[in-house]
Image (cartoon, rainbow, N blue to C red; front, side, top):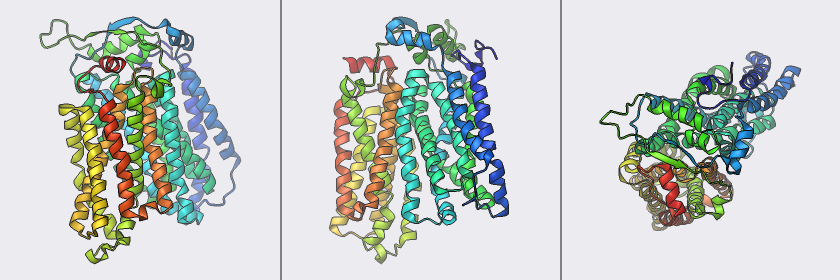
Length: 542
């Protein structure tokens, strides 16, 4: 395949054959584990204690080699990019299609990135479904099994930052494809005979999954017209997350009884391959291409998204001309430059959300029973059922989030749901202090907390993907996404330490940083609704 063919959609790859050879090597490495896995059909798919075969060791060696080869093949024009990073790529003038309506190319991109996000969410979502079978097979206790989600969350936090930086250095599309390749490679977790190997593969799975989400939002933000960018970003996050969990649950219900929990890890191969097959419809960001000194390729991508419009169309206002100066940006600006206040606000919000979602909410069923709700007929199973029912009632809240973000205000909508989360936590504090034991009040407070927390996470990373300059957008979005995972790690550790057993006090202490982040956001944030990314960047510079 020639490197200048349009198959690569907006960016020339130095060695496309190296990329596809790396893909083949990774897939071969996964298939090398198939004989070991298929041997499990004679033992009820129990593989614990089986010796690692030579084919498995060779396959494990082939996967990182394939990843390095694919990485080499994906790197576009490194010499030219290095010159651009020193300032040679500045002062590029071209049309950015912010004034065009949504067309077929935009919707194709939205659908493809939605599929990528569903695959991304599906991977960590399977953790809850593999844990019971894993505990039985490896004969481990609850505390040992709890290491698996903790390791996965750690991987997602690190991956969000690492892949975000990769996206800023080498391109959004390259980062998405590399993440998909890691999905494929970690499928071998389904053939691991020891719990230790599963922990390692789970960390690598989290590393790849954590990076996909901020990059998807970054590419969307830099490609979708300004008038539709906000609501599509929030809708993509809300719908992609919900569908990802539903697909994981459906796969567990259908496949796990047939081939045990191990088959859920093996799904990394077909789902990752699906993202690779859709790569034809994943363009590189035109803003990224411009920032690294590739204006001609940036224009080609922009032409794709506005080619159906004619200049004499009376309904076509014409895409605005943007002066793409692209000052050199470094990651230090996240904490020291003009974006430092908003970065601190978003990170504080992410940490508070993680503690509330993976800590307070996760331990809520256990704590409700311990508070004496048995008088309302609320045992552990019914407490979990109540929370599930509250979550069902909370689902329409995503539609409200999308509407407010698009029609009212992006910043104020985010602050509103942060404050609603604070009020919901304070409601639990009041119930604990007053000794309220009403299941109705509990249901209302739980539904309010689920609605508000869902709204916060649906807007947090999309908002971050809109406010950072092009050379920091992936890194900034990754840091914000990582903060929510880091909050989850803190919440899980606090839960193990028994912190959330102090029901009223824990609700109050989680509400405080949530409220503080709302005030910080209100002071440091800027409005993004309907504004071009360059206007938002100028607002921070001023």
